[in-house]
Amino acid sequence: MVKAAGLSLIFTLFLQIQSCGQHNQPVAMTQPIPSNEKTAVTTLGAGCFWCVEAVFQQLKGVHTVVSGYAGGHVKNPSYAEVCTGNTGHAEVCQITYDPDVISFTEILEVYWKTHDPTTLNRQGGDVGTQYRSAIFYHNEDQRIIAEELKNKINAAGIWPDPVITEITPFTVFYKAEDYHQEYYFQHTSQPYCSVVITPKIEKFRKVFADKLKEK
Image (cartoon, rainbow, N blue to C red; front, side, top):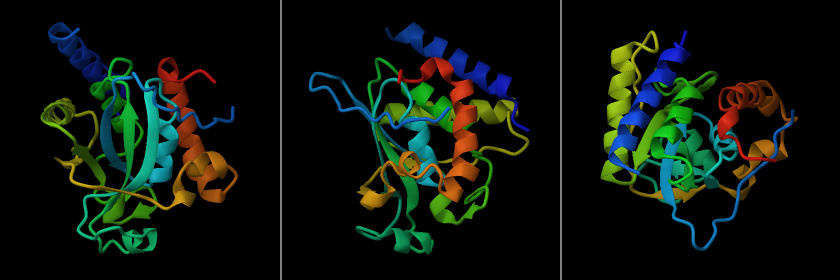
């Protein structure tokens, strides 16, 4: 069982350290990026990208969440190809956000609390390298933060098993087919959505109520 209180404390302390050195039925909430807004990008894999997209779309400060593929060796892969597990790609979401509203550390707090980062190439019933837990960092700051947090979580024994999230440099992102975009919010009654994603979303909205966008 995850020691949620311990995980929250780690992220709270990490945010404090950083700040000392710096200044019902859910609805899709992807927002256009204001032309004068400062933005950052991160690319995260945490199992099925339908789940990841549905979570991060609802966070304040997140402008866009795009489902796609990263980390493999095949150019312009299709969903069918990725599903074979032979392309090397993971299902990921590329997230564009305002770092003045939500920090990368806060992004990772949501990330690590909304999937199981201790299972190799698996999330629940979804099995294969395409479902691996992976952070594709876009710059050195993201790498340092991700590795430091992963080490702190493991040192604290938050999970019974060690976090095995892959932390690797971002190279290229391939947008998934259009029917995958906004998938959960357009198919909430579909069996996978109602059985797997909805319970996760309900739990997420309770834990992160203070970080949710206004409807």
